[in-house]
Length: 187
Image 1: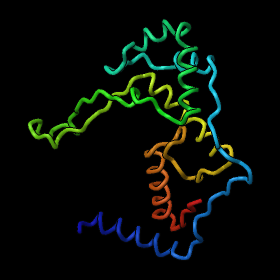
Image 2 (image 1 turned 90 degrees about the vertical axis):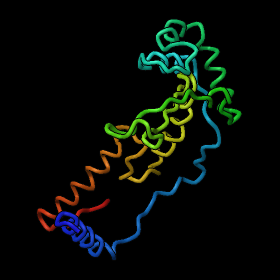
Image 3 (image 1 turned 180 degrees about the horizontal axis):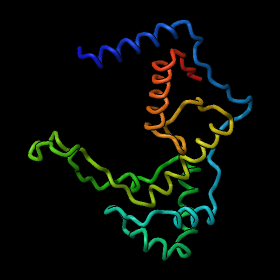
């Protein structure tokens, strides 16, 4: 084991031993009667706004490019609204929206391009399926957030948070520990 690995391993073991008696993590309980039993309908304005906020990049899976979709938004927004609401009320994602155009990309520069293991698949879904997905994801997320049911340190699936946010938090806590001998608070 090299010097850095030994140093890091020692620090991790120190943190583990110092937090061994820490209380278990706790999670907020949902309020009695607070259920997410069905999705709320979206309206035409929601759909129009979502379309207009789309980035102008398109997928090969799109029958209409995003720029054309934006041009015809007024003509098709009511149809998309009806489709999205029927999908959410039935609890079914249309099968056609599950179809993807698959391409490959080299995992990282320098890998052998003749080796199939050097590639990862990229699935491109249609922009309309992504719009429906955004409407579906938004409601449970808002439910959890407004009822404080998400752990405060959760970074995934939260606005303005990412794996980088989580790594920075852990790194910051470790550096505080190394610099000052102060145990980080993980709450």
